[in-house]
Length: 355
Image (cartoon, rainbow, N blue to C red; front, top):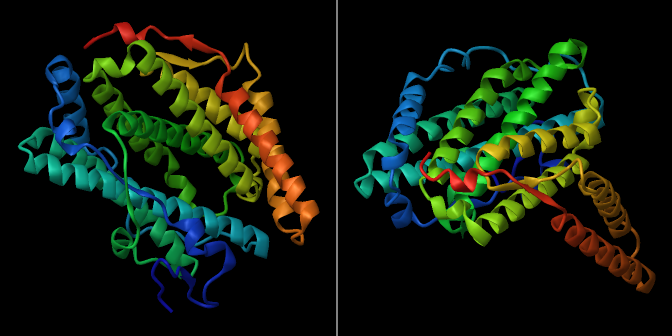
């Protein structure tokens, strides 16, 4: 049986609880297209041309073999199979969401007479479509089919200011790079933990993520005011904090997937955050100071409280549960505020105008 979102289904057993639509479909985004079309590339022209040439070269063209089998290498328990399939579906739809954003930006930029920018986003959309297609093939091997083209018409579009898109996509691409490369390194060191040939493609895959992140760093540099003064400080703090928080809670929810690969979820999350924070020094005026703060300690408390809230939601409704839930949510909110306010370090990039 072929199913389309919002009815993702297993070909054999019908819709599965871990493949519910509300858990799997992403947000789709749009932004200030007219403002994006006014991007001044003059100060970044050499870097832009180099990046466009690198994207045109498409060094990963032959790495993503469309004929290679992506079937699982070994049998999994029901819980392990659920963890693997959930990872595949969420990742597939997330990559497709990126494809739609880049495709729409490309189309609108061509229309706004910015063909060079339109072409750059067109090439990034190509990469995202390739990633989504590979994940979709792995899903088909699991007996799960998703009608990806139908997704764009089934979800509301979320509008974000251009500054938000530039900061958040930069971080999304860079955190994606560190996720893929750390999994790749782990599985190369422990090949017995690899459950599917899909993971063999993570090294070239992460290079795409890295290139996309570098492109967005260049685009941020085209808007110097985004990295200066109070605005730069607030943008840096908010997006680093929100992306790290989302990653921590996502890893918490999917801890069985990382355990399946022989990875300690908490250590993996911490390493991804540290490496992404270090990488952000090249783009953001401020980054968090992990060494001289309680950031990771607060992460542990947030994850523990989040798990308690989830566990409590499964208990029978009543006054006791309501009071306990309120207490936990207040504690969660207080921890969020403490983590958000942790010390940051100036990187100096806010002074590198058009450098």
